[in-house]
Length: 435
Ligand code: PXG
Image (cartoon, rainbow, N blue to C red; front, side, top):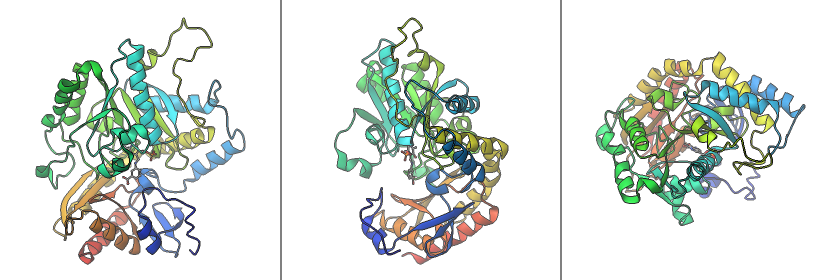
């Protein structure tokens, strides 16, 4: 492509490397992209964790077209449209028990901000306004807005921005002794018990919420040890702290269940969604909350003109997003996406763990159709090998995501066994090739 205009400021992109070796995608179909030079490239991250049902789903395209030609936009504040009510109902129907109301956003980052604002406002409405402290986790990722950046725990994402919001962090759950675990490592209570230390430090009377991803995605697919989330839930209950699950990547089948909450048997108070909600076709997110939280904002005796929760976006519940999400949910149900993930997950797990022993690999982690390989630093630089591996794979017909010291994988749920095995072959060759 000759017009790689620098008018476009690219997100989370190494400018120099991209300009030297541009990677331009011009099409997609099913589980593959088409590169600008006409090559078919397997999409091993479902875009950026969003297109689990495969690309260019015609049902979604048709729903979007019909919506754009019947009601393209409808004001989000003080007015509604039928599909947004329908979508909330559909989400609540499939959500873990107790999550009974949906607030819509346009992205995972907005879901992070929204969930944390809900948590703080909830405690105010409940007469405990001093409960404002928010707790994230080291290696967490909750998007790129102020709240998500503050609560997130990936150093390089925070370094440039100074102090953003009042947050503290739990330790991460990546233990050396768990290297090469298949699925969940055992135990992990002691990791969750660090929340008790933070409670001692800040006092529960000042803490609003804890936000964690059930599986930490961006930091390199860190699977929670088997007792960790349960213990976190128990400690939150003990101290009246809201538990927020950021299910932006674990939602809608990735774990082999509908949500990470189902896979790990822990129900949060608030659940953040985005990405696969529309199969990536239209930017949209949602925050699901327990009835008790919603009811704190409802006052039947308040005057008719009073707004209980002054929050929302121009595009909250956008009709086109709703149409895409409803069509995606139809596919999700009809094609039993969690079931497909469960069927394919053993092939994926075996493919990844068969790479153990190839050069540079220090860990392999997986759960459902999420996985990562952790790469040994070269000359104490953890970033260079994953970058070179990513490029080598791209050149051999495999799109992979590199980040920090890992390569991350989240193939479409509709991938074939062949797709996954070929992916393994390309990875193997790349690992042998890169020094
Ligand atoms: N929460 C989680 C858990 C995420 O993974 C966000 C929030 C933010 O979503 P938006 O829609 O605002 O980007 C995310 C996004 C990667 C990768 O390679 C992950 C994300 C985005 C881009 C790349 O791991 N996750």
